[in-house]
Amino acid sequence: PFAERGALPAPSGDAPTARVLDIEEAPRQALAVELREGHLFVFLPPVADLDLAIELIHAVEGAAGAIGIPVVLEGYSLPGDPRIHTLSVTPDPGVIEVNVAPSATWEQLRETTSTLYEQARQTRLTTEKFDVDGTHIGTGGGNHFTLGGATAADSPVLRRPDLLRSLITYWQHHPALSYVFAGRFIGPTSQAPRVDEGRFETLYELEIAFAEMERVARESGPDGAAPSWIVDRLLRHLLTDLVGNTHRSEFCIDKLFSPDSERGRLGLLELRGFEMPPHPQMALVQALLVRALVARFWQEPYAAPLVRWGPRLHDRFLLPAFAAADLRDVIGELNEWLSREAPSGAPVALFDESWVDPFLEFRFPRLGEMDVSGVRLELRGAIEPWHVLGEEAASGGTTRYVDSSVERVQVAASGLVEGRHVVTCNGIPVPLTASGSGSLGTGQSGLGGGPGTFVAGVRYRAWAPWSALHPTIGVHSPLVFDLVDRWNNRSLGGFTYHVVHPGGRAYADYPVNAVAAQSRRAARFHRHGHTSGVVDTSTWPSLESLLGPPGTEFPCTLDLRRFSPGNPPPRDTDAAAG
Image (tube, rainbow, N blue to C red; front, side, top):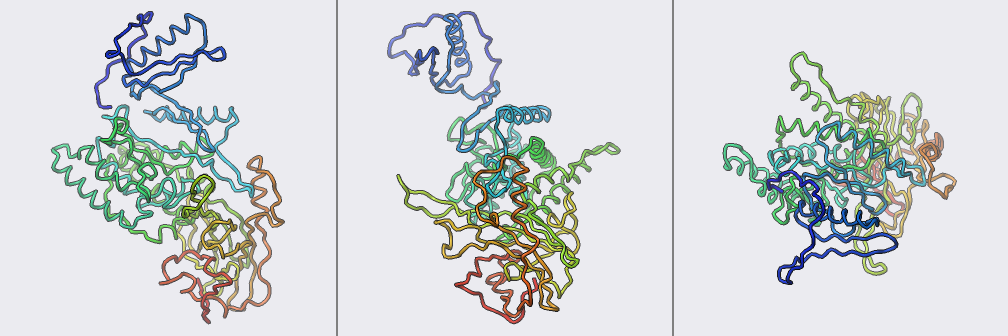
């Protein structure tokens, strides 16, 4: 990949006549030609040199033109080379995978993205899906970003290894970058786990690796860059998933500078924590954010101690309020850097916060809202990690299922009177926590909130598959939310949320469009069904039983699985006030 290359050879005249060689001198690659159904199928052999491969293709083209028979090329693809641009369309389980050519400018990237989406639409392909219950989701296909240069030697990640460290550290500091743009399948057993998900000692080892990068860079000379192979050896075994797969990680360096193979030394860094968004402008916003952060860290390397999030990682940042607040911090820091870099008196093109609103609404859809006695209640979808289960016997071998039976929602309340109002779900108080001040473009309580806004997450068993964690726990649907008046021990009102249509499985087919999907989602939220009569607050569980030992593990989330009928929690006369 680092070899000097001249211009590609221009097509010459007629191909030279083939020569008959002795068996000892003949090449070991064979060109297989077969006439089938009126087409000439040519099976290309593996060729390592692009110049020779082009000559071979030219010879095939000339021969096909001479005999007037259409040709279908098969076999091995042309060797990778920075002098050619490729676009590959590959069938993948459930999706069509398209690998586009690199873009050197923003105009090229915009043209490529817009054209790809339009061509897919005209081919009756889509970049979104709808569940039977109306949930709007992505296709499940990735929208991975590959960072590199026109050649391997031009790669900014190889020229400046500290850029890789800056990206890894910044993503670790801002979990919203890992969760807002990802698909539904996240967590330590997903296809793009964060560096701090899974093995708890990874951050400790990563800090040692970063220190070694600095030491080697200081000893390498005046340029202050560590050798590329050192960077690969230091980080390769840390940027993996739980079982050591280097390709299934949020930051994949398989093709950065691996000594193992030529295709592994392309100077490429792959960011895998992005899902295909439903609209081309959303895809461009993702790319713009990544490009802007790369430009920022090229000018100002980002080095800071790694954060031990622990349970807070999933307890807080899987909820829309905290994810939106974290994303707001990213945009604010980026705009501050843009303002500093702009020449004095020059207009500054800032990253508009409203550009990420579609991602927040798509990732955390509003399920319903209502006003109760001056208190605003809102229910939004949240993120729930689905873990891979243990191996089980299946026809033809073993299989590992994913536990998708648990889901999570966020309830937001504004206008609460301290000491009087308590929000409950299925009769259990939810541990409300103050959200960040302000909102992220939308001005809505569930996305960032404002002064006086409190949020909480609720985990619940949505359905009962035959293989899942805790099979003895039943389904918690419907979820009944009440606003309880502690002064009078009565429910002032509330709403009911159904996981499926309240009349049962009323739909046999998937929604045909977004309007039909929205109507199905609206049918599962009812502004009635709250608890009536006197509420016996003396039976409420204690705060310790709500949060679990030692009482602070998941302070923002109520897990209804801990309150199954067969395992009632300890009671306390003092109800949890949230």
